[in-house]
Length: 100
Image (cartoon, rainbow, N blue to C red; front, side, top):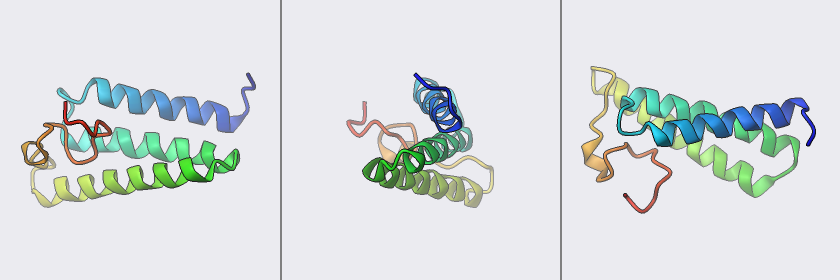
């Protein structure tokens, strides 16, 4: 395995996403969205560098969802968006589509 910049950035992004998912019940909506945004952006860098275009598109969608959640949290006035409205208790940026 090479340790070039895109690989290291990709690993860091993956760790952020998995950490966010693991801590989703204890993170605020803002922090959860930030973890997802930074993780998706890091993985997008790796996808771009390796020309993995379908995965780049996916990471851009996830980043967009995280941005939407951040805007929603800011508009809520407290920095915390209502996480119960999505049905998963983890905000709309949750990568777990099954809702469990």
